[in-house]
Amino acid sequence: MSTPVLNDTQLRILEAVAERIFPATATPGAVAIGAVEYILRALAGDYPEMVGVYERGLGEIDRHALKRYGRNFLSLAETDMDCVLADFENARVDFADAADFFETVRCHVLEGVFGEPEYGGNRGLAGWRIVDFPGQQHGYPDAYINRRVDLPPVAVASKKEAK
Image 1 (spheres, rainbow, N blue to C red):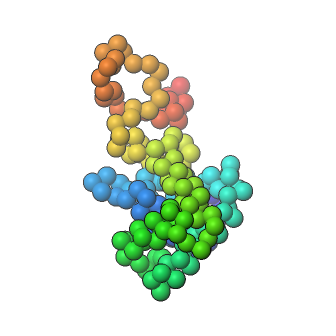
Image 2 (spheres, rainbow, N blue to C red; image 1 turned 45 degrees about the vertical axis):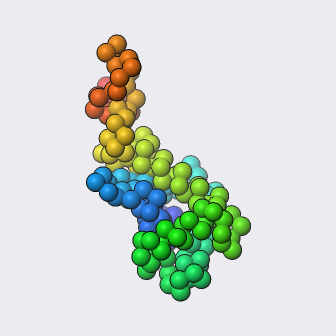
């Protein structure tokens, strides 16, 4: 990506929000899996009309943190970040589109975690490994009827490269 879609502060807020939506546990979190890269690629490509939505919404997150805690969002403890985001999710802020913005970001983070890797997220197929999704296989042997598929995940891009 040659031109940044968001400024540095907006990017850092987005990373913090993504990590609160899908935090690292025993598995990688949203940032390590590439969800933010997926979102930035989408904003720079297929969803340029969403750039203003992200700029405004990320700024409102910071403003709400200042109003509620007297500190910027990035300086808050994780539990306080979660409270700010819960206020957005439940439309308890002075921003009419708060709930819609939170839901948009949440959906985009999850797309970045679990989507096809060729779009910038799901780095190393980590999202699929977390949920034991084998990727887009070209059918399964009869042995997989009525039982969990335990095939290693395969991305579409790796299938194209193999041809």
